[in-house]
Length: 242
Image (cartoon, rainbow, N blue to C red; front, side):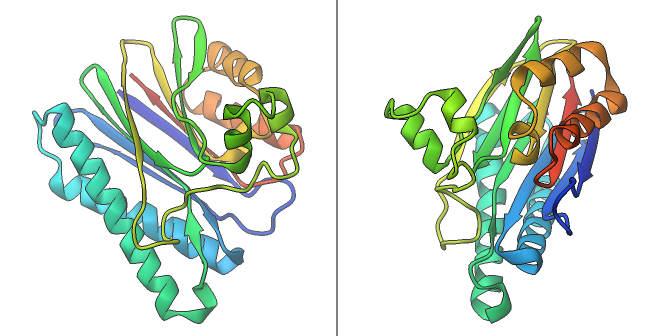
């Protein structure tokens, strides 16, 4: 397995509040994390960078080859909850950071399965067998409206409240985390991204890029497409090639 990533400030923002880390275990399995910070330039940067670092350290320290699916789920949950508490305490102790938080989406690809945990509107997709499928469901105001039938997916993409999320790491002492598992096979791609990509490049555009390019070039092209379409937010993409 191989991992390729890129994060970019975009065409409008003055700083990058996204953060991403990834790595490979000794047994060849891999992990990746994307966070998108919020709470002002300083707070967003601190929240996302603190979260990815804490989650990465917890995963690296506690992963063992041969873990079961339930054990990997617990590993992701413990790592993200530890990061939630760390960011929350930082925000309570420093008035300049009060209210900061971050989205999170994290994956461990172990053998033929991707184990994914997330909170917020950073996403995971699966590119497989000529199709691109969103694996996570946004924790956002517009997603609630879509679920209720009040908005179509197309309307949600341009809704003025599309950036309001209903869950974020570090905002409260307890965080509800969604979890899913996805079978993968050779040639599949797990794509993690911040909403700077999903809001500025639609699934058709992302699919075309993943079909036409590979490796680092594909990730670079995804970020370039978001920027070409306006680049109104920081953009981060991490592609895990299974």
